[in-house]
Image (cartoon, rainbow, N blue to C red):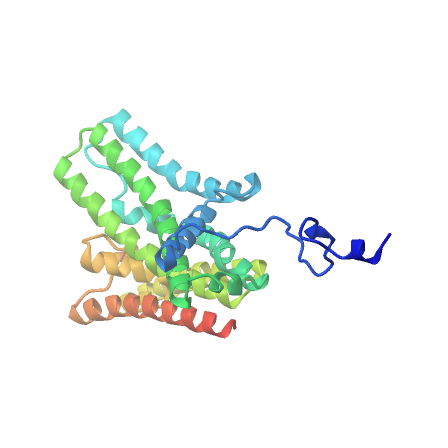
Length: 306
């Protein structure tokens, strides 16, 4: 074979050893959707993940089970109210989440680490930031998704109670007012709990540690404050009971709704916070915790490093 025939020609480009092989990648010619679309996608993915949607069947078991546990007492209350022709529901809308705070705490302990710990542990956070998304978008989307998931968990049984009350032909105005107060209460609870849960989970990349830490913060703090409040009640120190409620997320929400939503307090002797000073301090602490949680999350993801 003559030497000229060994030279690659235009008719046979694959014979050129310097040519990069085409393995099928094609240029993206679609629209660039930008930060808002990426932020909305991250919010949607995180909210669906909080209930195991789009994940394996095993991931759906616990959140769906806890959702059913939250709604079951509401269904029973409605059934009893309809069957016995009650004149009012045996449980106020604003008290429902307080009575089932253990279920809410367990859901938060299970889902907050799932939302943020996996990204930290498997170092996938830089992949998010390789797209048109910034740190504030990531934190805002995760925070909003966790708060929305908690709101769905706590508002669904209130909707069941309200629908059942209307079926039982209870007073429409009273039930609508109570339902609105209940929704406002669980909205505050959802935003507050979501911030605390995400901060604790983000500080403990391993999911198991995150679950234990969230349970400790939410459940043990409530038990400790309730115990000290009971001791104060037994010793006749009623003034201290309201102020002690500032040191637990659950009692903090209880104090806010008894101050501003006309709810009966679950504190010992129904000695909820009262007075103008408490009316300033309680919402200030709630807003401070929400803002502080957001700031700590922003700081945490600045230190993750890109």
